[in-house]
Image (tube, rainbow, N blue to C red; front, side):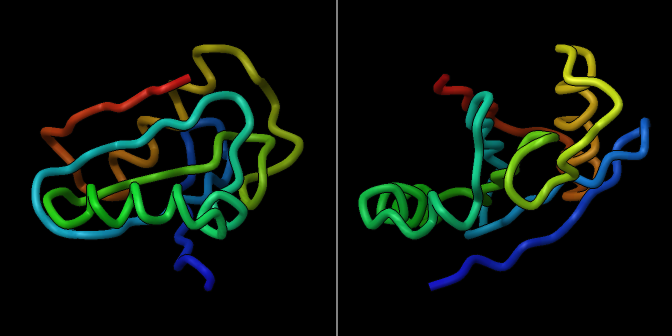
Amino acid sequence: MSVPVRFATTADGVRVAYSVRGHGPAYIFVRGWITHLELMWSVASFRTFIECLASRFHIVRYDTRGNDLSDHYPPSLSLDALVCDHEAVVNATRSTDFVLHGPS
């Protein structure tokens, strides 16, 4: 089972892959340093967790720069650059108010 993937472009020109699921208030799921939208979706327990959340929220997950479907050779991997990724995804999904979940 694959997950639909979209792309956002950061202020420094990096393409960031993201996926959305569900309806309701925005819930931005930030997965830490190593991400892989499709691989994580293939794990049944993780998929069940996201589907459960998606029954109440608009779940947004994304691959950080340098990972999976996002650009693999970004100009920077600094904390500021990672915040830039987050900003691009939030803007692309037009989320103004959201829950931010950063489990790592």
